[in-house]
Length: 102
Image (cartoon, rainbow, N blue to C red; front, side, top):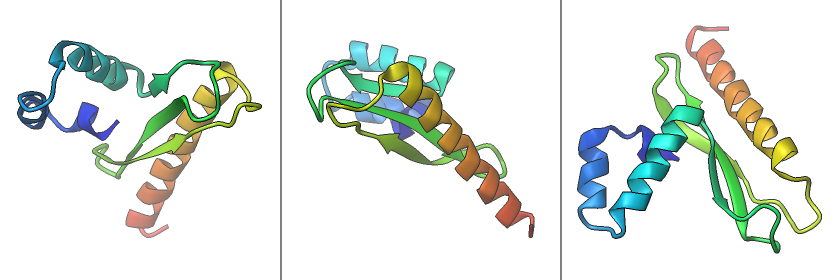
């Protein structure tokens, strides 16, 4: 998640040392576009999937990420993906209010 928002120079430096870069570049672009990173299969055995969303500061910069790794009996992507994205937005809003003295 964080690499998707790290900027081109940081991404290229990372990708130069990690293969296969083509699939990862595509994944990073999708994460940046959608604001959601999903790794693994859904549904799948416990621990085979995670979903993450960005947390932004008051300037809009991504400063952290929030993720969820559901157990085997957890709800599917249609429930968890929007929930993790809403959580990321809520934390972002809390950071903005805190910075602005609220």
